[in-house]
Every structure is written in structure tokens, then in C-alpha cells.
Image (cartoon, rainbow, N blue to C red; front, side):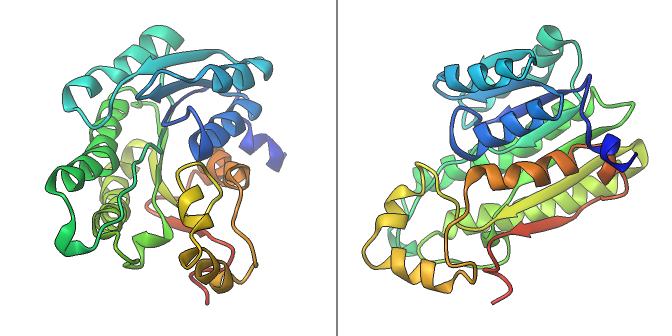
Amino acid sequence: MVLDQFKLDGRVALVTGAGRGIGQALALGLAQAGADVACVTRTGNSAETRRLVEACGQRFADLKADLGVAEQRKGLADRVVSELGQLDILVNNAGVTGRYPPEDYPQDAWRNLMEVHLHAAFDLAVQASKHMDGGGKIVNIGSVMSFQGGLHISAYASAKHAIAGLTKSLATSWAARGINVNCICPGYIETELAEALQKDPVRGPQILERIPAGRWGKPDELAGLCVFLASDAASFMHGSCVAIDGGWLAR
């Protein structure tokens, strides 16, 4: 049955930045599909995500690490395997924001954003791949800014373009091993991190007017695509960057 291909029973997923927002919605979607979930957050505040995952009858592991610090990323995949027995799915979701005119962009903020969005994604993908000799799924979270420049977000746009390239390169390297690497590219989604932009009296209405769907997306609207890319239904997808954006890029 085709729906059986979407089941994640018996699998273990590591989702970064799953304490809230998009990461939490993706973690819940994976749990609803049958996966046990490990969550990485900088603050360790993932009690609500734990509650949601365990309410699905799935196991949950809570890992605290600042992904912007390379030393704190060491051994994260091994810790998941130690706590939950295996690692089949990695979702590189964690991110930070920064909005400055290019000439005023602080170098420390630039470096931290790149570390969290790009370096951590590569680091964790390599770590996870070592536990995926029988095959596995890596889902990177890009953005519509993987294809566009945006306004005053030079670091973010650069990182998200790089995530698209990383996705394609890793897919090329690992497809023969049965490791699928793909990328979800969300448009404007209602989250705490995006609240200030959504409510900005100038940019908020400008963005809304440009979205053909006439609204911002909700985090749980990304979960189905994540489950698909993490499932056997996507077994022949390698290196795809899939936009889910209310028609933003189509306009």
C-alpha cells in the first residue's frame, strides 16, 4: 500500500532547533508518523516538544548544545545512538537571524550565523552518515532565500544558498550508499523568530501582498513534506530543494 511507504515506525530522528517553531512542528510530524525523536536545542528548553512527542507514544531524547560552537557539536550523533539505539533521520533545522545593511553587518554576527546554519549542518550530516550504512535520510532546511537575495540579510541569504549547494553535493556523494539528502525551502512562516518582521509596519504588508496565497504559512504545514522526505516514499529523491512558500517563488 502506498501509504505504508510514509510510515516511520522503528526509526529514530534527530531534529535540531526543535524546541519551538518549525523544528517543533517537524519533530511532532515525524513522531506522528512513528519515529522516535532526539531534539537539540541551545537552551535545553524542549519540555513542550517532549510532551508532544511522548503523547504520540514515541521515545524522546533531549540534547543541549549550542550549534554555533563546534566543540559542543562533537559526538551529538553518537549520543543519539547511545540514548535511542540508532539514527536514521537527520533534520538540520536550527537557525538564527540577523538583519543589517551589508556595510553595517557585525563580523561576529556573520560568523555565528554561518556556523549555526551551514557549518553545523555539514558537521552533523557527516556525523549522522557514519550511522547510516544501511541507508538514511537527511533533510536540510533551506529557504526561499536559497534562491533569492532578500533585503539586509546578506549572511542569511548566503548561508541558505550554501545549504542548497551542500544538499546537492552531499546527495551526489552519498546516493550510492542509500542516503537521501534533500532540502525543504520554506517561504514566510509564522514563528516567534519571524514575528517582528511579520508585524513590521512597512515590511510586513509588503511581504503579505507578494504572497499569492494571501497569508503566511504555519509551521505544521511543513511537517508533511518533512515526513515524505524522511520516508521510503522519497527513496529516489536525491539533492532536491523543494519550495513550500504559498507561491512566493512562482510570482
